[in-house]
Length: 319
Image (cartoon, rainbow, N blue to C red):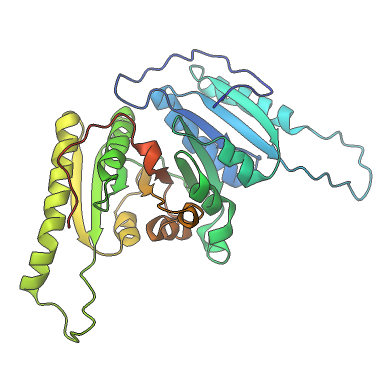
């Protein structure tokens, strides 16, 4: 995408400080309207951009319809473009090395933001209080954007007050688990933080057996899940020897396992795959549950966007 073709070109250093093999080519695009949610998203994105040397673009989406004011006002209105330019100027003052651009586009918000998504960009949006998300959340801006995006999307809760540490990535044993873990590992290495691989599983439902599975049977069922997690963690550690890698195999719903922890992570990374036209317009249960109970920034990564020059290793998931 052309990340800097907007109202104001970026200035500053622009040189990527990240080293070869990480996400040096990733640009950060922040949906910004000046509200508290977009400010929280912008603050999170600025930290990431400054740490990794990523170019940053602030985007305002102007709805196509024009609403006339009820009465005239003597106060001159500030255009969205001018607001973005001023906000970008303040960012450059606090982080002079950042390349910061601005862009104003006209159209329907979700559709225009989807156009900005792709494997080479991380689109960052703010979400209001998670308590307000529960009712129509599956049709909210954040959920619709994440469901249709062509690249990774970060949804940042407005309650985010701590910078967070560590990247948590959920791996389900699917074919894209390695690519997703590699994406998260490169990001963790760039941000000089640790990586935690979480593989959640649930025992099969025994329809004809009214009794719970005994401990020995549960251990047999759990064994391939533990083996998968161990193989994946070993593969990531082998490719990134300086990275602190932890792993956990948890008997739980995936969203519950990913949300657990004493300290908030920098981000929780989850995958998104679509095998049909209908599935493309929906989110998986884990992504949906994470967004409905947003406690930390969540990054949803489509399978195609995660698979960027990742070698095929022997990390087949549990069968």
